[in-house]
Image 1: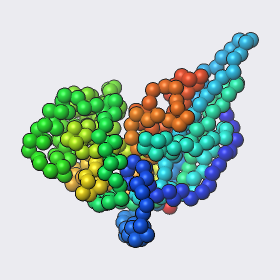
Image 2: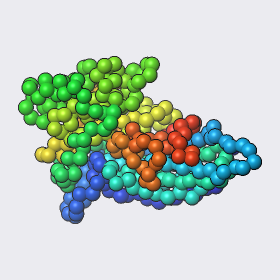
Image 3: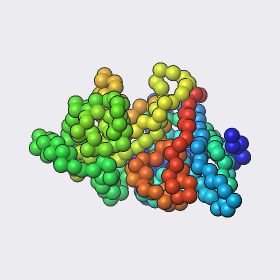
Length: 343
């Protein structure tokens, strides 16, 4: 087993970003900061420690007399503070010195390291931090410039606007005139026509073709369909991904990622929705149209991610787990474990 050569950071990450894309939107008046602080002091919140662990294994080995130098490159996402969460006491253990980067489209933060020469059979990686997550029910976000939202009218490759999506959007447009009502109808369409289940193969990729034909999947599929409908209706919408925190436990293992979405209305700013949680909790169906609860932590925004430094493979469908290339070839074999503990 590869032994850690600890390369650690421990600092307070209090970089305030707009609620969605991480793009900065100009100066902020002191009175707005005071209003934000007052909002943070009154909103429901939850504080916890989160541990993100990966063992990258089954790395291909070369044999023979004339061994060529080899290269392994590893990228992994770093959660950031924003209006709805505060990240602090970040500590990272990696087998090599790493660098931090911001990708330019969504402003996601990325840690990167590389190893050259004789490669180990396994690589261990661990990140732990503290998070305070606030309930997101903000209905007015005047600081986010409308022109920045326009970029979120562009669909992702798998979240394509296909004829089936256009037909659904046309029916919505014919019955709902204002954008808010259209988004509520799109949300209801997803909930009424999708089933949350994980069976067979094809689900979990955020593929609108799959969502419209199979009509089931996980949070990725739910929000891919909602975002495509919003974009077809001329409303910017964006995908966010992180991890769920159990509402019923104070500590435990996190089985995998969770994703959600926001849509943008010029008069209100970014409006949160969580269609898959609404499906699983029917009594909170109306709550999750316009709110995200405290039982989550966000890691990255957007899809079709080009990393920094640029990977040699295709853009990532979404970025939540480590991405690894060995001699320029993607390597997916790894063991992942995530856990949390309330503070």
